[in-house]
Structures are given as C-alpha cells and as structure tokens.
Length: 77
Image 1 (cartoon, rainbow, N blue to C red):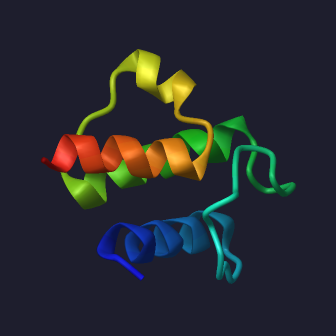
Image 2 (image 1 turned 90 degrees about the vertical axis):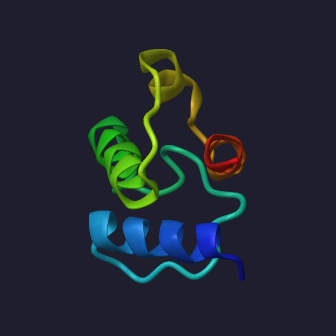
Image 3 (image 1 turned 135 degrees about the vertical axis):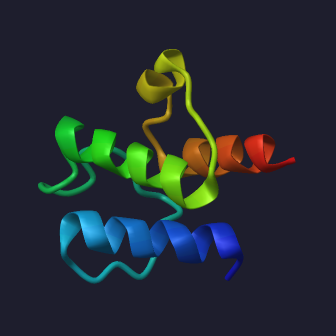
C-alpha cells in the first residue's frame, strides 16, 4: 500500500471514527457517516496532511477516492 493510501485510510478512520480497510471504490455517501459535512472535513484534513490546497471547484468535483488520489498525486508532483 502506498503512502497516499495509508494516509487516506488514517484520515478517513479519524473522521468517521471507524475501521476502514479498503478505500479504492469508496465515494461520498458510500456509508452513512460519509455525508457532505464529513466530506468537507476529509478534504480539509487531506490538505493539512499533504500540505496541498484544493480549489473551491475541486471541493465539489472530488467525490470519489479515485479522484481524490489522482488529484493528490498531481499536486504532489
């Protein structure tokens, strides 16, 4: 598992306060706790952990883990 996956799992476990093992196919509303408010918290935590910034447009577009991982990778290059 790569660094981005590990960090995303940690972030999600902290935000949702539950154990998460696989994240690749997850998206907003994949489970009850992942609502729009918690989605916002996830993206804010990602910004903090990876020292990146998302635009307002990205906050609305990044609604799956696949898209989030792709955007993190792009911003870290």
